[in-house]
Length: 273
Image 1 (cartoon, rainbow, N blue to C red):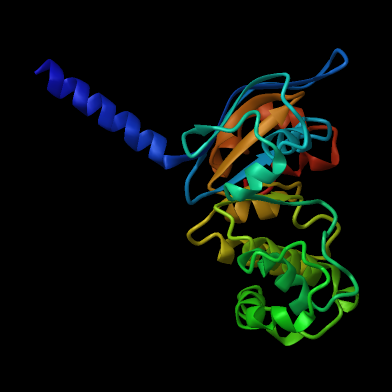
Image 2: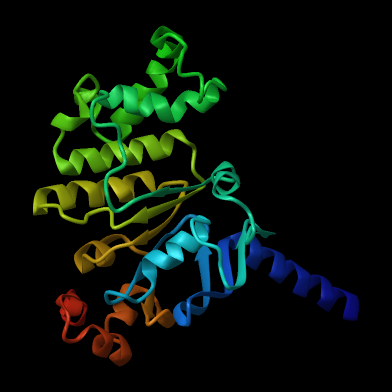
């Protein structure tokens, strides 16, 4: 009987672990006496959209930088697919399938949309750094690149120089180049920042579309976006987790409402109430 109980316990633990793609344990980052991230325990479930929100200065971007190893933690652990990656380098993290986009669109402005996606696909050929090779050697990637552009509704802009795309379409292109790197976990940093309403709607729908079969962890200020597509929300304040749960629950949390009051982000208190 005892052995059966132990087996069931281990089975439950294994199921919980397989459901969790990314976990932080006591994640902490100090800068010369200032604690930007303080003992954060984060658990991201596989196949979900998980939003990280909080007032300005809450530690969201620092947390992202820790997860992608642009910063080294002062203390704590980062676990991805049950493997500790706390001390791994950014390139190792990327090879594991953790791919990040940034607040500012990170595409090559004078390449076409198609050429930008081909850059992301080059690693398939093992020629990522062979800049002296003819562009014709990359044409074998065109079919896959066009398929990715079609996935983000940019197929009609394949031959358009990126500099001529609207800001929203540039962000869509960045998502396509991120998808080209076959991410298992996509980290999106303010994907709708600086956009007009039309572009916000387009990119929000796109994030929802590409989330099928993937996991997304995102930092986002627009609460309408968060409410519309997030499965789970973690609220940070002063580097610590203030609340966590679905939007309907978190948005009514008195501590969360208080944290946002007096800032432009106070809309969380009333949005979708």
